[in-house]
Structures are given as C-alpha cells and as structure tokens.
Image (cartoon, rainbow, N blue to C red; front, side, top):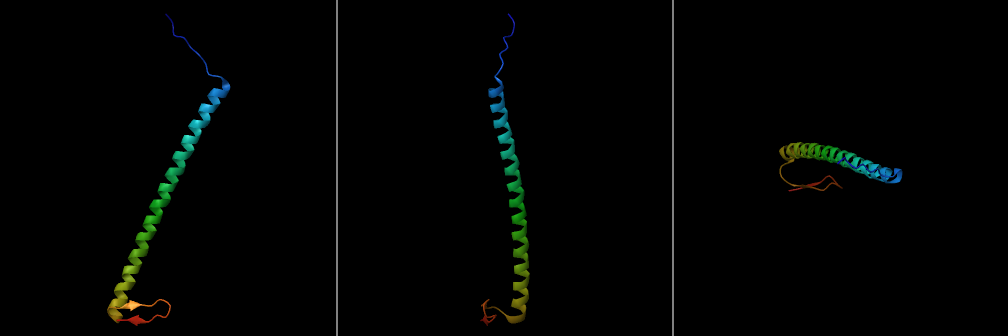
Length: 76
C-alpha cells in the first residue's frame, strides 16, 4: 500500500507561513528586549557605581549627613 499524499490549499499554506513568520518576529522582538534590558541593567550598575564613588568622596570631605539637592546644604 502506498503513501497517500494530500496537499494544502494555497490559502491554508499561506496562513501557516504567516503564523510561522509572526512567531519568528516575536522571537526577534523578545531578543531585542532582552538586549535592551541587559543594556539598562549595565547602565544602572554604572550609575550606582558613580553614585557610590561620589558619596564616598563627599563623606570623606564633609562627614556623614543628608544633602538637600535643591540647596546643596548638608545636614549632619
């Protein structure tokens, strides 16, 4: 007994191809988001390092205290 072959209509085949392409596009978009998230994480880390460095320098110069960013005053 031979193999029975059936064929999808052009419309059915195109629908499946479109869905496959949408999955591919979604995967690419998720990959891009992951890269952006990684970049944002790295930027956050760099900002935190800068903040810690400046905080250490200011603590050494002025001692412990709270800085009012609107006036620049340091309250011990």
